[in-house]
Amino acid sequence: MSEASATKRIAILISGRGSNMVALAEAVMQGTIPNAEVAVVISDQPNAAGLQKAAELGIETLLIERHDRSRAEHDCEVVDALKQREIDLVCLAGYMRVLSSEFIGAYRGRILNIHPSLLPSFPGLDAQKQALDHGAKVSGCTVHYVDETLDLGPIIAQREVIICNDETVESLSQKILIEEHQLYPEAVNIVLGRPS
Ligand code: GRF
Image (cartoon, rainbow, N blue to C red):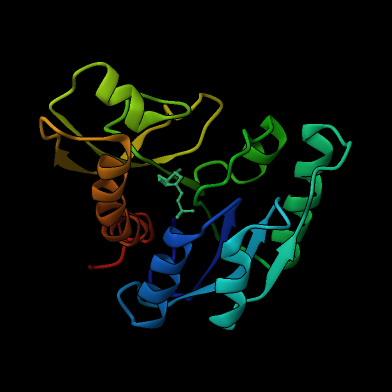
């Protein structure tokens, strides 16, 4: 990404709780991610708790539901909203939709996702349960570029956590989430070429 010193406009896409969205927004507001702005938070789910959190942080929110449209039609509306706002970087943060090739093509190399495992292990849903079911001793989180694969685009940054003998899906998810909130701002700084 060029012009490392210019203010970059970030969009965050969510479907639910939005804790990673808040971590990113706070990192921007506190200057941990310098010269950046969270320009919009978009949800495909009307009940996403993150929408209210974003509004409380003074960030524009948009609800773009799929309804009965095709994946490409829905994504077309999202991409239009991103282009209208001159978005430089798209951060998926618990956005529970697979992106169409049209969306990926429009923002190739500028879409990031965070996933709660050490990819390429355990892509897809229920990554924490997958790690426990496999008897993994270490797991963690990954920020990666989004491409046409499911969670297997090029890796930008990772953090690991140790899995204890008495670990549950809930306890592991919580341990990983703490690391996610540190990792995502670090990864955005790497992509934007900013010191962190
Ligand atoms: C996180 O565990 C993230 O890794 C995964 O979905 C969860 C979203 O949590 N993709 P939140 O909405 O950011 O709190």
